[in-house]
Amino acid sequence: MSGKTRAAVAGANGYAGMTLVHLLARHPAVELVQLTSRSQAGRPYAEVFPLHDLKGEFRPEPDASQVEVVFSCLPHNVGAAKTREWLEAGARVVDMSADFRLKDPALYPVWYRQEHPASDLLASAVFGLPELHAADLPEARLVAVPGCYSTAAILGLAPAVAAGLVASDVIVDAKSGVSGAGRSLNLGVHFAEVNETLGAYAITGHRHLPEVLQELAGLAGKPPDVTFVPHLVPMTRGILATCYFDLAGPLAQLEQAYREFYSEQPFTRVVDRTPTTKLASHTNLCLVNVAAQGHKAVVTAALDNLVKGASGQGVECFNIAFGLDRRLGLEAALQWP
Image (cartoon, rainbow, N blue to C red):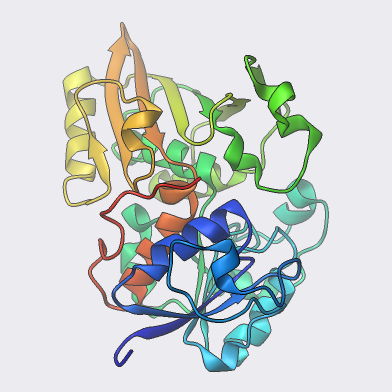
């Protein structure tokens, strides 16, 4: 194990946590030494992850003094209070929840219904979207991986906003698979409730919207007004975000802006045809297509909500933060769930 980074995964029994374990278990530069879950504490790893040669038992909490990095897949507002002790123990933290994504502490009571328990850490957290913040990740002690919807929306809009080619308000129509709701039991995601139906939700505002506005503001000073409407689709995984706005120039100029913006990005690709979610499924790719109807731009972005929208992006940030090849451990497809 010499030369490998010792890692812990907190909350390893949810969809994001389990996806992360699958990625890290095969990562050539990681020694996965601690998996934690209060509900699974005491159970052997092999009972939950039979396809990996993982030795040991689940712990209720990570011991950050024994690892170099803690990947936190704990629910919102659960990991925030623990992050300080992990940092003080010497570990770096890659957080998959929403606890450190927003820089303004006043936004947390609005969107997450409580004051932030560690608001003094917000300023030091790096928003973990490598396409925008790769240069900040090597020095980051705390990385806040963005949400799945916000990743798709930001990557679908960033080149246009940065180039000043958005001439109107923006509408983002986004659709997600059921795994985006997490693994906990919930009537709204039971098979009989979601099969053969499609519906919008969070019409008055989704929690990922302030992330989108924050990051677009960083590109343009003042972001465009964004109307964001999510929909739940009866499929396991995947997100498709369709972004509409008036063009401030010819379509060819918009296409060129996207190709230049993502020309050096290994995981965000501009494609010639509108992508489907299945093309990106089980990969760390975000596939973006640029088109128009008359003067209205129609930009589509497809990704896997559990990989590029969560755990894969967390590993991508880890790779950059620890001086590794950004693609390490991310180029083979995952198979579950």
